[in-house]
Length: 122
Length: 284
Image (tube, rainbow over all chains, first blue to last red; front, side, top):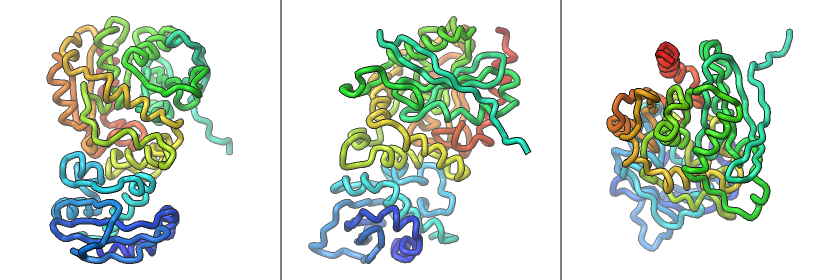
């Protein structure tokens, strides 16, 4: 699912425009599987499954596979419907340098939510 | 065809708050029992515009919403440019009661959301005899912080953008896009540091857990309604609070989030109209 970010984000002109001042690398952990996501000027340039030793990231968002599965439902249930709902209830953790995340918060949240657009998310 | 003009009228009233002169904006519509509405932190009274356009409400209630100083169209007091804004329980109570007395409202129902829902608990404690009832939306006696408010006001993060993006998930998952984004626009427009200053009240200066049991609902009835998608003030927080107030009524609003009156007005009215009917039917 997370690998689909590449197509979903880059096909969304408004979303790419929102992220146009962001160039960074971040990590999304789905259970024990890490994925390195590279962003350049709002476009996703790569989504690489790790672990990749010595590969840096600015911030990481970690949650269980179950939490992400609920988060990516087309209409997620309460408590799984937002990145901060996940962290509030201990279902996700955010680590690292939060400045690029907070300065581009709407963009990053919407990037992470794009898989909801795929019907029957699993 | 004549253009549609809403029944809402807006004016300014000059109040002395904290020994300082404040120019305060308010809007109102309807007639009957005064229903004084208190907006959320970092937003303004426009959140109640749907209630003011709902004849089922305005046929029986005079709906009034004012913008706290620093918010909406109310100006900050002179000298604000060198201050860090911080709302306190004392200042908030003073603002609500001073406004109510200035407009000569006769035992209004006070309905507040989020921090407005918190302060109605204190109002019910301190000023019960002057109020007909209080309604707390997304209200509890305490909040467990879920992010660092330092992010809300600093030069390397856009304040309006980050305030809206932080609270965006507090809107229920099925809210209509028009109203979801209308709600968030209010957050995007808030002045620098205002949301953060409101959260000083909400997080630091208003732990009412030891106080709410003292509310006498025979004098001032308490109604609490919280949306199922609200993870800032959860339905459990509200039910826990209501359990401590003898006679308080509480319910969870399915599918709604932290801004029920503005994020999904059609769904909200299904919950609030029966409450307003009950208050109206009770002996004055």
